[in-house]
Length: 311
Image 1: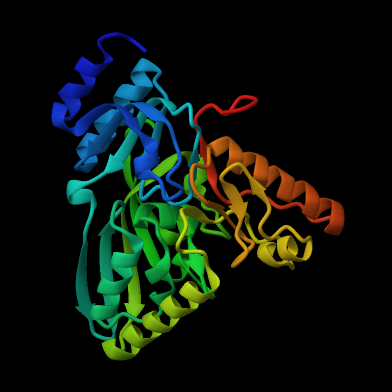
Image 2 (image 1 turned 30 degrees about the horizontal axis):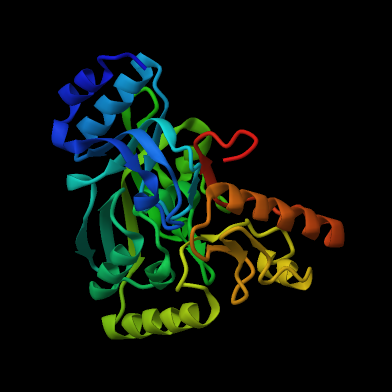
């Protein structure tokens, strides 16, 4: 990385928006992750485009994060620039259009907050997202879902930023959202703002549904421990958590990482877990399930940083 990179970066965003050697454990729900060379909060689409363009010009690796809820960062940290949305890239606007509620949300908006705002405006069907600890941008990128609902059920389009810094609007169809996948991942497009449409109903019934789902989550998920949510994708015809439980892996530990006994689909940080602990535990789980059932479990969480042969 060139010595004058900080100077050039501070021409795109203010110095107060740049941190050096920021621990990424502060920005992931796993509470795991070493320092980033540069941690930058961008407040607008123009700033986001400018930082990406500079990184590409200088050949500096970059990583865009939302709430850090689906991310495992190496304890060695990230050698490059980590970009996080703030300012006008957070928050939502709503418009009532007859029986339809239209919503527009910045990529940095927390999904849970957005879901509750939708409910307050009488938008139905998005209750499943009220317990997802991610951001709107990350939710669209991964087509987040729970309890039978998915982002793609309500998304109408999104304003995206390409890796070369170009801005464009893409319809939901163009984004090709599938199970925990989208064209965004393949094309290196990054969501800046997403648009949604919901049928409208009485807000109180939606609020009750959100409360019911929250109780279910408390009972079934290890919310008391840091994690990245479901660690593995759902294999076709199976449930990852059930396979792991039936393999007898509940409570299996590597260092500070553990297969949750409450929900075996979650690998949790019981305290002091390293990223390498989590990765080794995940590998043991994958090997054991494949040996017993012949089913390959694919990681749902994203890995960032250099893992090498150990953390």
